[in-house]
Image 1 (tube, rainbow, N blue to C red):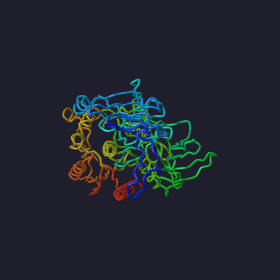
Image 2: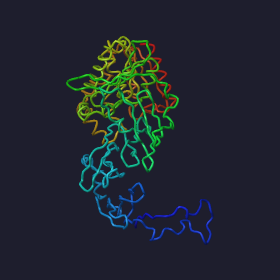
Image 3: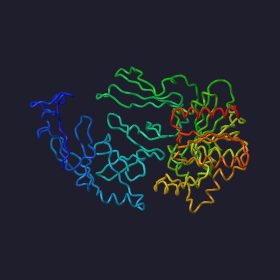
Image 4: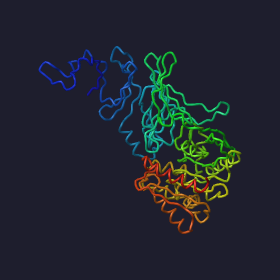
Length: 502
């Protein structure tokens, strides 16, 4: 079997719905040897084409056993050079053998802007979270993007094949993340800069499509003409354009010789000091908060709250050192980092230290419960949304894969060997000490943090006669993705927080 590319004239194809006759042919008789551009043995999994449509390489399988990457070295002939090959039978053995978890299967998915270099994924990852720049001639595979928290579903490339971002599966929904969004380093000298990216251009490069976004302005699209004149195309949230008044401060605290970055968003109106909502992100490993537009943050700021987001140890987007420092710190130094940033912020004159609540989802919900228990002098209330309440239960979930189990043992703990230590960092072990009101919210169809976590909290809150509020969304999933679910969640959260600190 051969896979082929032909050069044809679309004008000669049979028009749509036109009936065939004895004198007409659907393809206009064009699939002939003289129109053949390239021919490759076997089944082509992926053709790699240049901007002009000419084939440059092909990833193809032969006899269902051998995968080859071939480069076409002469556009005027069918010459090809093998860049790499993989034995499919050996790959299957690696995939099925969990002891081979570190073996990489790096296959190309797109051409890069550099000749002979490809963007590629490691298909032996449990989920595609790393993008490589691969030179199969030299065997070099350099990491371009590492998204520890989100599955990458597609690449976003400019017209010259430069990688400018990725599409990820985040909070159960496909979302765009540009490269600049995935870098969390603060800029202490310059004011907060907006995201300004050329996402596409005309073939002559003179006309561009530009994407812009800032912390208080949702993403907007413009066409930029050769003269520099810009025309507005549209916005991600058109009803919010030029309506959000917020300020953003980036700073850091030092905890055990490690710099912990944080983002503080505040209203710009005059009624200070502001009540504060501390919002730890989920994960906790690999996820991070960036300086660009965050819908939840801007919603809370518009309601008169300051919002603190801490990129504690274990967060992605900054450095490998910060990320790896989160290992085995699920209930220890990560919480210390969050609280250290909180203490630094409540010392500000424009923050009301007597009106602080902590709220979060998933790991953020866990952190909210733990810090409300451990530091009641700082946090007047807590909101735990889909929060982990029993770390051992979380690590023994029936829905996690073998790869996730291995990862959890390395980064959180091994329940079979460290049961008591993991119980010691679980909120259910300290409910008797809780002295602040807490709101527990969970989706009944959560497959990430089972609703059993919420019911265990409720059982103990009732047992110790604690002040709490309870809400279960019958159709809710982990991130409350449906607009109606999200609206109900935010309404209940703000009503609760308003009652205790505002």
